[in-house]
Length: 473
Image (tube, rainbow, N blue to C red):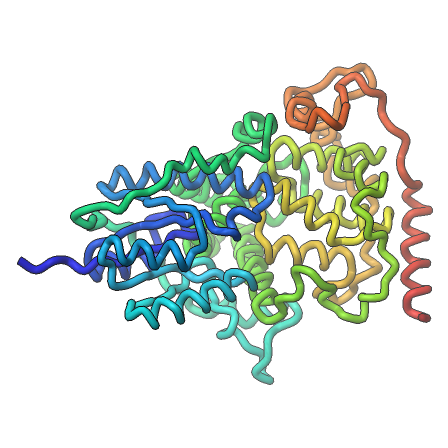
């Protein structure tokens, strides 16, 4: 009797069965051993991303179990774990879906070479992106540096139809031992905030597919016109599912294309936002330093405050700047693990321009607090707002929180949801902020409102003056 060859399917940030190229290839080859490794890169994640990963792992573990399969979980260096599992199981191939951040690329390149030297078949697949970063080129055969030309280059490029979910996942005759996910305590760093944030998170592939269907059916038509309004609730809310691969960008693309062809007014703009995410990864692939350095090197000498102990930075983190919209947004972040995209731009602009604090400090705070953390989108977004990134008119875009509030929250519904008023009347979500924050902050619902850290006009003038000084140096 012939024995079915065993392939290790290394699960990373692709917690889905549908449109999963590595899993599909492994199934075609024979028996499949799904594996998740808690390696140093997982250990280094911020509190909220690690918490959200824990939820995704639990959901995917259940989903595989319902298919008669398992998710073998182990902790350690990825190469060591994969080599051990190959020896223990008799696996002769290792498959995974590609990641594109610098640390993953370096790790995976080394692992692929080492496993091939061991005599294993090793192959990686497209999964997290629609367009591989090295395939989209300018007419001069270089990478794109501006979004609009990138969008024009890919908008008519055919995106393969999503792969169907498998009917079954052939299992090996015996399973190697695994570790209990609960023992890893991936959610521990969230402390008491975990129970609060969990109420706002939809977890797993079925939930992501249902949300995409709901968005395309009921909300996409109003997306372009209303997506910047802070209380409109017309966004897809799929950012965390995309960051963990509970749904693929190709699924979003094809669903949006169908609605565009049907005449839905906001569908094309939704597709542009899906491609904006692709552009962020395009930049990170070609300019990996965007995570840690100014994308525009001429900004290296700019006089941002780079001190995480600065009292203004702490007040910003706590949602106590005295600017209602900024404070509401920072509290939304702490309660839900997300922040409306318009609010992200406003809070980032306020930190880097009105307060003059380095974009890296804000980026790291978001990295710790966002359940939808995405290294490319986070880095590009912060640098785009700060002025050091890929923006045609960088530094002069200074968002005024008050005028932005008047325009995009005209009835103050967003402010009311996240901020208690002077009478200490508060919505449930505003109260939850005080249930989630560190006890060490010493904040109470009954605390009086704080005075603004800076006058908005003075802060803007100071930012522009700093830029003029910088230009003449």
